[in-house]
Image (tube, rainbow, N blue to C red):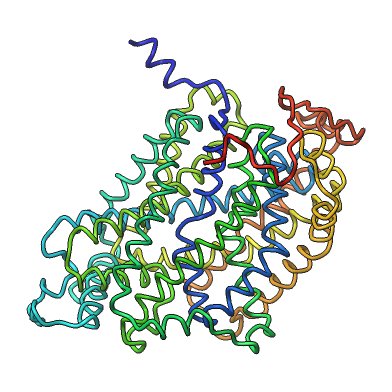
Length: 556
């Protein structure tokens, strides 16, 4: 018994997914999540439905899909995270990879806070009536209240229980003990799912990836009876041509594509656990199609709820706290049934949990790649990492924690994510060479690239994608309100937004100071310099898969 336990706790291998199904579900779990349910519908509502969808598809084809193919190919070939991939390709700019890891770390800390909120509401769904129902107060008649009454009740409950806006609160830094407990439970669940390694955690994705689609369909049917079909159709097919001529909508679409697909901050780590014969082109195209379909479906579900409430009451709702825990909670309060409340908040937890698992796994993967001697102590590294993240997340469990959460959520997706993705494209296309990447895809990953796909990747990697990213990055810098007096929250937010970028010059300076010294990556760079692309990292025989050939193992 003791020997089995010791072997279970001490893992020697890096870990790969058991089969191509789990590998693809991991990519879906990381990319398709709360961003599709919350960010996309919010932007679509601002730019009138189909208008933003058109800009999003344009951005996806010119930037999202090429970046996805690039990162999955690099991660799958190198079997390493971005910190070590960029060190091998261009050592002076290895800070780009480490900055991506730092960004992933910051997102992991606040992302699990959202899951703790869903657990908090999930616990309340077992009560009757549910705590945010108008029946809990004395100002509404339980037999006669409107959807607007339910919205006001849900809004007040969130502000007092999570937002800390109760008039009786005199200590803004007082800890919210129930939220603290829910955050602890969320991190314990992460530890339990990751402690056996990537190979076993892949089974979780069968539930967390497929379950949300069933509940989304049920939610749409639940609210469909409260809306007018003409209003819903008009919002979905409305196209404002003038908006498509503005730079703002394409910049917002670029930000959504990067955040949703996970490029520039995490998808490469997920792909590093793939088998070498996994079909990169097929997975990338299917992932983009699924991302668009999911985003469009979530947009319809969110619209169906928005159109059932007076626009004056929801005009300021543009974040996840307002959309999920106020707007949708009002629908649940109006129905006043525990079953629907349980289904909805379990949906929110499932949408975010697989992404959270893979983000934490990405951070620990970087630790193992940097310090291989820690790999036998996999369980202890996972537990310690989650403990540190839990302690950092406690700052958002105070009465004023919603302010810190809002800053983290707003500024982590700002300038650094675009800047690092831009540098990534420049490094791989010009410094390392796009021809080498294509040769790796052909010779090592066993992909047969037809000429149209090859030219599509060349044009986007060398021109369209870097230009799009550079223009978007410049636009966000220009649109930022730099003038006038600023408070401490703005300054702290800019530190979050630009913090990861600081690692780029720091590591470049370190590389310059240690130039000429031996390091573990020199042999690999020498292989690249000679142009020898034999499979030196993975002992596997690549399969000659056509780009659009569907792997029988993945077919349903």
